[in-house]
Image 1 (tube, rainbow, N blue to C red):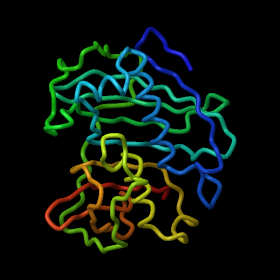
Image 2 (image 1 turned 180 degrees about the horizontal axis):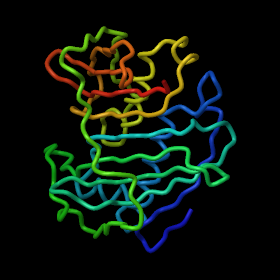
Image 3 (image 1 turned 30 degrees about the horizontal axis):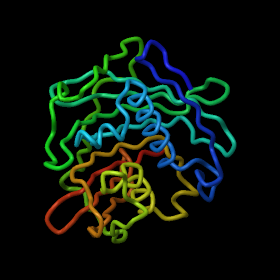
Length: 248
């Protein structure tokens, strides 16, 4: 792992058997995991460790993630994650990612929007509240600010299953971990669909944080031109909306 001018962070990750699915392909949640870990290390390298964030009562909350996949990782591969801050727009932060294989070919890229939040009050903080400066890296860009997932109002969604937040899904803020939402989306599809389809992208918008014990319905659409839409729907609130994109 290394850094370039404190702005671009580069870190290597190995693909273990536990990171892959029944097809021996890397899970999409694994891709989000390594992106999250690289971003955490990048911020930690600036002198702002997770412990210091928690002591200050601050945390990061992802709003939207838009991931493009050229191919899924394979077992025993070494992947290299590049990540950098694109700067802020109002109270929101944009962070980009590129993931390369050992031949320096790009496996995936992503754009994400984050907010700095007061953990106790659950309110968004201005970027100036962060005690260290995070300068933008301007030498690369995956693309413009990602848009929120918009499920067409006339699209019929059917319940695939119900989900309850348990210990295994929690992060260190006591809420459902970002990457676990992706597993939830993938579980809405059948093994037959995963055998026949090739995932090329994933867009997800996190609307509400899910806490321990909360239960909600996982609703999904049929196949559309855009992909398969998935929603986490509680009795009185939406937790997330996502679109899984597949090769046509």
